[in-house]
Length: 83
Image 1 (cartoon, rainbow, N blue to C red):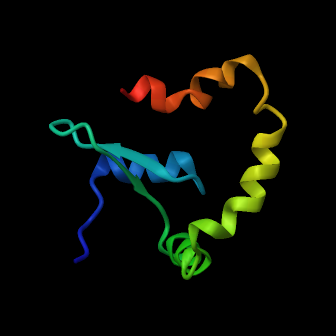
Image 2: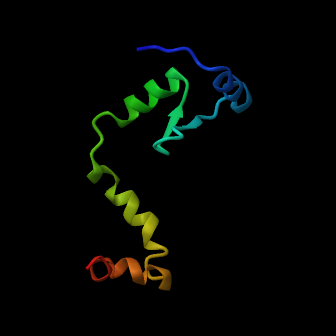
Image 3: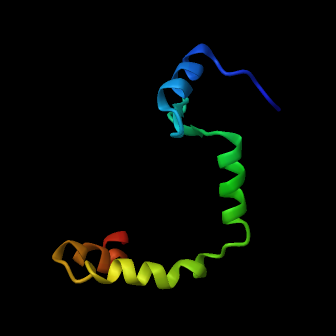
């Protein structure tokens, strides 16, 4: 289904240039992202076939630096807080 952009959306597209535009449904408060079809297709291609485990080593490297910071204590005790 293809629908025409509203005047507000057209202005946002012009103002934001190459950036995605966030739209909010006032009744549900859900946020949607409006982006150019070429960018959408590129993101879809990049994500196709990815598995969460593909990101484990990168996540480990990213989180290793701050994992021992005191602010992470609550996260380390997540199961205790969940109860």
